Image 1: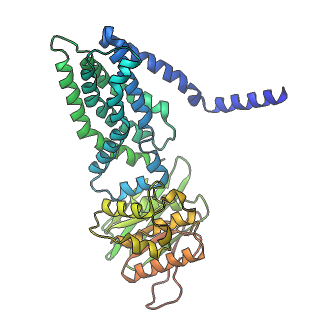
Image 2: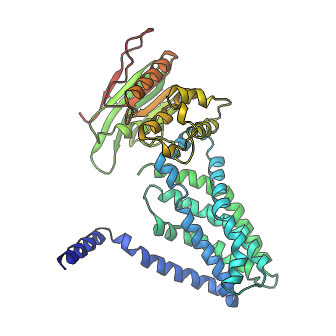
Image 3: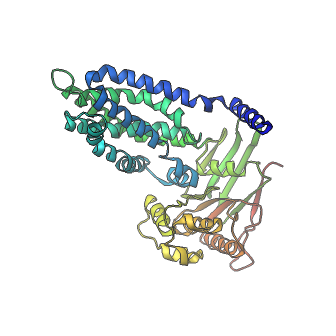
Length: 219
Length: 204
């Protein structure tokens, strides 16, 4: 019994020294609730199905983004890129394209299956695929800026989610709008908006990633 | 604060750096000319790595400026070798990133004593072999100034000999190097003679 109390006291002490870490699950819990709340407004009766698939794609994306620069940071190849890659933009874009092909595209391909098998929603599967095909690269690009900023902090999981999810919400809202075929135009406006966001993030995010990675060298 | 002194490949003026605490160094000036070997010495935590990162442009010094007049190469505490790629793949990736038209990774790795393991993923190499894989890329580039952070770390005697040889031939071609080190990196007596290493001492 003494061993139990010894260990309990030690671990509570450690938690008290770094309360932010202990708050992570709570923050994540609240974040999920908020994201579902937002999506429910857009998706309406399509929430279970396309709406849920989009939220899951968002969280899967944030989860994957954490590891984007971590390996390169740890082994020092990131320093080599920062010193030698002139200009940095194509290097960042190439890195993000590879990341999306490995982590984003499989989700897009599997999404109609997931929507049908697990959520019983078979309607407009192609709208779901199109929305994710345009939307998830934008999520990856936005997430990468956050990942670049937190790479020196180490295991920035929830911090990263809190940082980038608000920025990704517009993509999520219009993505769900496309998938749910909203409005008189059947989601056409939402699709244009989504494509505009993708175009903007392709042109801006690699620059921001370069700046953020340079800042991360200060840690 | 004028232009860097004539003939300087790299000149740092009045650098200071502090990381939220006391100053690690202050008013530090270093001028690197052709054939120079500058050894940065000092106890652990005295700012050797930080100084090299400032010279490489990875860190912005709190005061002062660094003028780089030539290509640099940098091998840091983290060697810049991806453990999921082979030594050859690592060399070729960096060569392409830097825009070298052609390079011979095989010869470079043979010279570093890694010929037999050049197609093994670097995760399977020892710490010393990984360091050799990082040093093997130095002669590939046309970089005039090498910035090396404790390049002898984890190297055995033959590895240290290879490094001294690389440094000597680099300097004979007019290159220069700044090395954070605890042991001297000057080459054994040989012709043609090179200037004696200079020392920058930190944390006095």
